Length: 520
Image 1 (cartoon, rainbow, N blue to C red):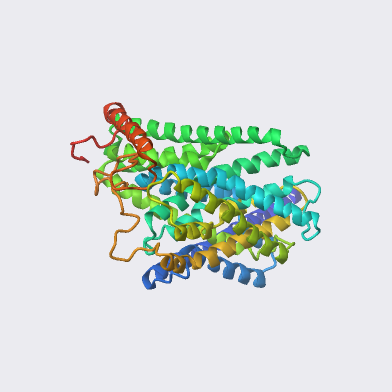
Image 2 (spheres, rainbow, N blue to C red):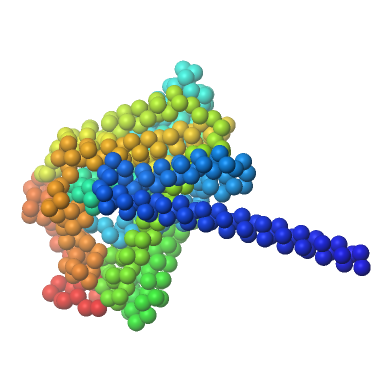
């Protein structure tokens, strides 16, 4: 009897604890839903009243800061504050994929591929320059005793240089991709293209430096080619995974009648996209690049395999998921500022690190723009170069990488990175519209938007001629063409791709055939 009473008492206590835990998570989830709703409403008000000084990402960040500050004042529960803290794994596997896939799926491919050479120049060489400038200047500060970080080995500082050189596509899309800003399409293509591709460079550099740090080695000249070869392998492997996944998905949709069941159609499309990201990350490649190019392939081929219902619905769903994920990312970073996880703040290091980032970006944007202009017919003007330099927005990718920093100085790197993210998002993001206006990079609201400036759009039911991939060097003096010989070479490659695409690939994977009307 006594044993039965004890068992019953312990059972009731466990149920009460379970109920308490359930209630705790329910209330915190409700809080997140309410705050996220405030972020969405803020975005609506920004668009309605054209508050260009406060981009949507800045508004979500500020809402998060306010909520995090209030939570810090009214609660001292570590469990409560941990619930509001930024989780890098949730970011990489739950929030980032919808944003990147939507960017690739709705990509203006003509502008992107026209400028691919310049974009790769900024993304690869530029990120390397920025990494070493920021890293070695930070190491010099440590050697001079001005900041409390490792002064015996530059690898820790180079890790910081690599992570803070990641120009975040989430921040860039949120601010410069806004149709209301009507940003110059060439400018947007360069900044957005760099932000997507340079993450692969930054992440590979971070992993490389991390391995050397763990082994207690320094990066000498003999190891630089190995690191570059590793980056090349990661980039090529990631692109191959993205292309292969997109083609497999397109083949299945092309040769089955899944279009008769739109709910399965959209579900399978989403799962293939997410699978490309997860596969790349599982074998230590770049999920961002794989997912981005998977989206490009699915837009080029698979859009015509979808039913008319799914053609419209899929894009709206992906845009909605991307909007919610973007707001969630910046909201979480704002709330994380006051959660109390970070104990070490160094204002001097924050200010100097911001200056290092601006210097590192200047040392690659202006020289590489000059180098690129030597082979471009449509030049990158000086005013546009200034905007590109200013638009190096840091975001959640840099902050997520900072939480993987090794060693005893992790806290100071986290707080410095978070401060730089807040500065670039709120200050630089807020000044983006005035800078675009004064530099003449913002189009009037009667002119075509950068979202509609060419026919390379992913709205298949509205624009059947939207799927001419790699439309390089057109006769209108478009960007990315070199001298006459280079132009002829590019046009020859373009014609060869079109021939292969129309004769072999589209019949197998889908897509609009020349002279054939789109059908649902």
